[in-house]
Amino acid sequence: MPSSMAQANVYPLHGGRNALEAALQAWLDTLNSRRTRETYGECVRLAFRVMGRERVEQVTFDDVGVFKRLLADKKPATVALRLCALRAFFRFSLANGYTKTDPTTQVKIPRVMQGSPRALTLAEAKRIAEQIDTDDLVGKRDAATLALLFGGLRVSEVAGLSVGDVVLETQEGETFTRVSVIGKGAKPRSVDLPPRVYELVTRYLDARSGSRERGTPIFVAIAKGFRAHPDRMTADRIYRQLRRYARRAKVRITGSHVGRHTWAKLAEEGGAKLMDVMAHLGHANLNVTATYLRRLSGKRNPAHTHVPSIV
Image (cartoon, rainbow, N blue to C red; front, side, top):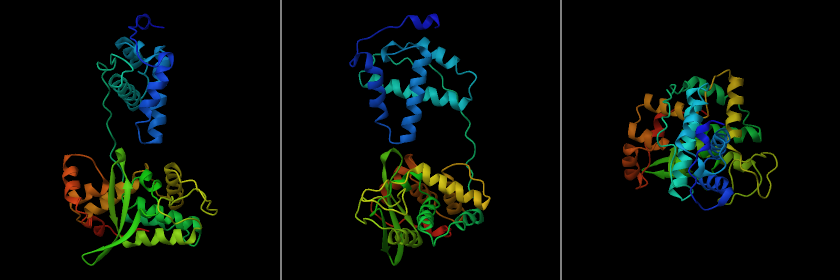
């Protein structure tokens, strides 16, 4: 163990020797995504193993510096992820009394160049949708999930939908599907889509046995045997189904946001207003906040009318 790790300032904090796991679990419970909780938890536990520390308050600036140097052979994205997780954990620990210092304040996190997101062409997206056998119950389910994904929703948002979250509405003589989702950061929003989406969801629910009460998951893992309390289909499984159809169609996809990227590209090409597109996708910044305030009136978002139907 490096000599710099042998001289730690130990501060009293609540929780005793188990304070690390107590603090870590308390912090992870504030994160909304299961995948984020798992990834960040692994990053922090790895850091403490490498630093040779068992308690939050034992970690020094030198410890964090040594941890970063030992990551030198890793890709910049990996280094950034592990350091960001550690920094976020210590900020939480300091704010909640698990430590009296934040040893991550001086560490520099490498900047990671993000690759350009890839959107599909309309022809490629349609080719994926054509692989689905909608005469089959699983196919009816997957057609509905793909329609929502290519409607700009996140995979986690589709997985979280319950009966009652997808309704058919009419405003100013226009009929449309309104989807209520819990987005990133646990922020609720409404997404307006073509009537075809409601039709696909309803067709699947009509073919599926089981409860239609509000709060019941729409997309369940056991499509051919609905139980009294069905397991909600996970985001990972929905994405795997998308990838399966994409392979059949010989279309390359590069991540779970491919549907969102495709929708955004088609909306822009179709002439949708930028602010409507940003509101539809639920992007969080000052401009989008202004759009949210305008849309609190519940007026129909016309962005979806600029995108051709895919499924």
